[in-house]
Length: 319
Image 1 (cartoon, rainbow, N blue to C red):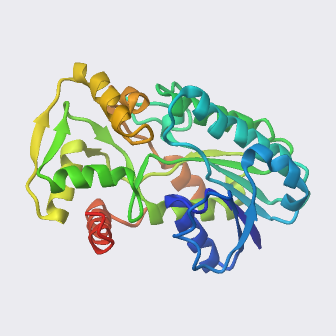
Image 2: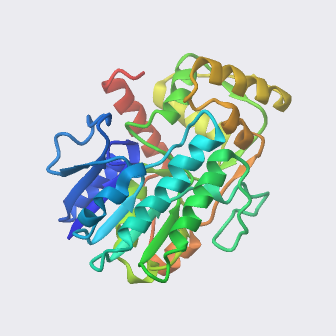
């Protein structure tokens, strides 16, 4: 089985490549000339060097793959146009080029809970929830989904929507680990989150690609528990051995926080667009559809995942 993985050098992509290799796939990684290959350069993979904005020029080479896993995209950007170009336009370019292949058994698009938007008290979102994204990132991921679904009748496609994903190599959760390691974390009221450890996610992605029942479907992947921000902070505190002080921030201060974060690092996790997500307290989803139809089941508890992540950060001197 031959698979193409976009976004392979990244956090989730590198884990997916490892999982596919263990399952016996012959893996090709779509990379750019500027890609940092540190997580995959030691693996037995091939490379296809091309920017997704120019993938049409390599359309003939896509015909040799049985599976395409599209993980590349922007989770942080300076403006909405950048999100749109990376997550919608490039997704459309790739699936349009892939549609010429008669060999393709599945095109898997990794979307996000952000494409649907937040839920509410005792109301996690599921596949029947009308999408109402609240951020530029979320809107662009929804546009990417629509680009994929436009080829639903021509290609076997599957869309997967994870919530926040954490684990070793991740730089987003690292921000919270570092704050807690310094003895504090920001708090603007109780919030609720669905989460998923990275190895559980990529196992679900690979299994969905191979499952006929996933063809043409959209599914959420998450673990079984809804966590509060206090619970997440407590687990990180336990894993780092630091009792962190809760710094209360009024929600009215969030736009200023996003502005300051963007001034410090334009592509950091604290930015103006991400603040749109912070305004909402319920980022929860229901993986019931994936459990019933695909047999998906997470394996890693939050305590295990946080400890393994903290240990990895320490070993690699990220903490």
